Length: 120
Image (cartoon, rainbow, N blue to C red; front, top):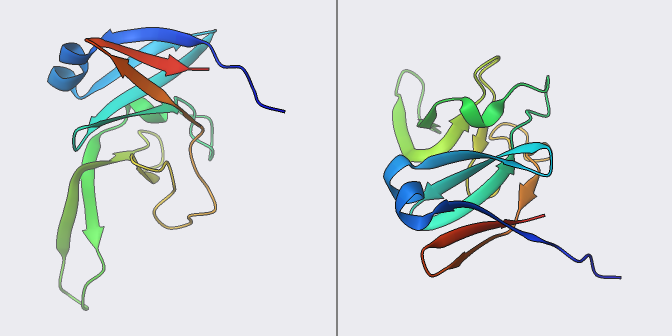
């Protein structure tokens, strides 16, 4: 059985592109909508670790695998870091960087004209 989803307007495309992140109230939930590499992604604003407002954390990059004493930084503006305990999540798939079995709850995003919608 297929779920019927409702579209909720959360921002204009220009607002999302300019700010990079919009946190919207949708059906009593806070949902963070992020603009990453020309695509929009929506995640529930709840960290699976301790229910922190994860979408309010810094959008950044992360340390990449490297040799001992070598620190390579990458994936700039593709990671959100939980403001409470520093857990890092990939903004393109919602997965925790250290444990891909843990992730954020995501929602489809549609862009029609200049309007950005989250489907819930």
